Length: 77
Image (cartoon, rainbow, N blue to C red; front, top):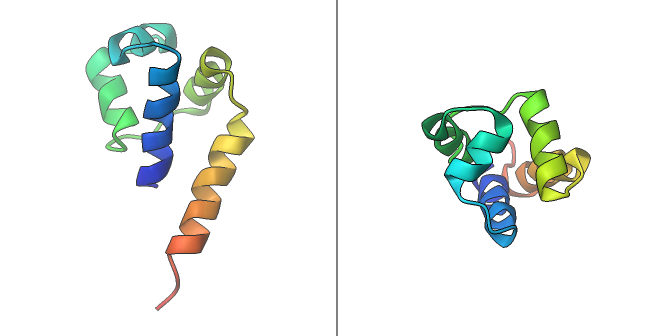
């Protein structure tokens, strides 16, 4: 899951947005956004949809990336 969050950071940075600016666009406290971007807390579906619009990405692509990343790297014992 960490790679998906790193990807979110990269997309935000490519758009030239700081964490504070992104938090404002999502209507949340900057500290809360930082925790979510770092994977310490989960994003809501509404936040993902808003981030999708702001960053110009498809939410399914983001979720598929996370799912496929877990499938490839996490194997049952």
